[in-house]
Length: 306
Ligand SMILES: Nc1nc2c(ncn2[C@@H]2O[C@H](COP(=O)(O)OP(=O)(O)OP(=O)(O)O)[C@@H](O)[C@H]2O)c(=O)[nH]1
Ligand SMILES: [Mg+2]
Image 1 (cartoon, rainbow, N blue to C red):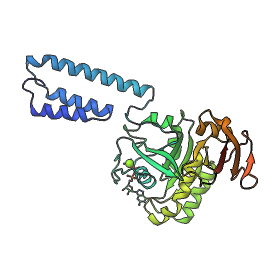
Image 2: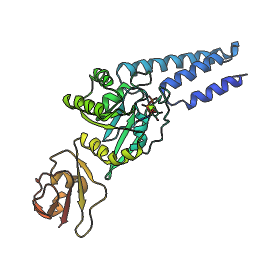
Image 3: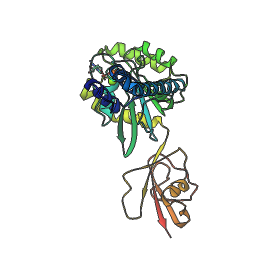
Image 4: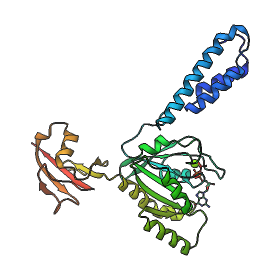
């Protein structure tokens, strides 16, 4: 601790230690420097702080250049969708409805200043949803958008989609467009919007995030749309005489029985005596199949062991 440090300095130091993002670390460090003791005995301290600031700034500009996320603590999950859109379009309202996240929702612009992370459960599958701060703001995290598996683009008018598309050159993510009908447009206007989005071949849906009753009805459909965008299949396993597991195994389309076996028996799949399938890939329930049998979404696989 520096000699004769002013309480303002100690406060600034505390804020700096608690800062979560690189941006906040820089801001709080600048504050620390401005209130640091000015006397000669603290010269060393001031030099150290300035050096630290320089390093943080370099780190920030580097992370911006490579478009990597400068925000810490986001561990990308297997199935990740990132919500993007202009300010006040309802990004936080959407993540609140779909996940366990509790974001601040307000009618002033740029309420969300750092990414909000939520977990959405869809029939036993965990999907990570992230609200990226408003695309036109300094808080927007381009790296997050570029690495997402799926982008949920939320708009309240058609002009927004053109602008956002122009910003999405570096992503291979699947896109889902959500038109949030904030203005309560007439059925006729909505038909036109729907026709336009259809003609541009968007995978889209129109909702009104304020209308709770309506949302409840379409929630499952929306979750299904998000799950489908990842292009994965869910396969349940089952032991003989028992019911199927609650949590499906997530696989690439056309995965084989052998791949499931490897996942659950870890190299001991030669112990399998017989495999039976019930579901979309079977001709009839409990069909006996070989290890090369290709699976479909929602199949149930039963392994009998030697
Ligand atoms: N009337 C109406 N208001 C809505 C609708 N969806 C969101 N709002 C309101 O619009 C405001 C902004 O919603 P948010 O969910 O915070 O929007 P956001 O996109 O997260 O905004 P920022 O984080 O500030 O960029 C809030 O006051 C919401 O209650 C809607 O469908 N209809
Ligand atoms: Mg928000």
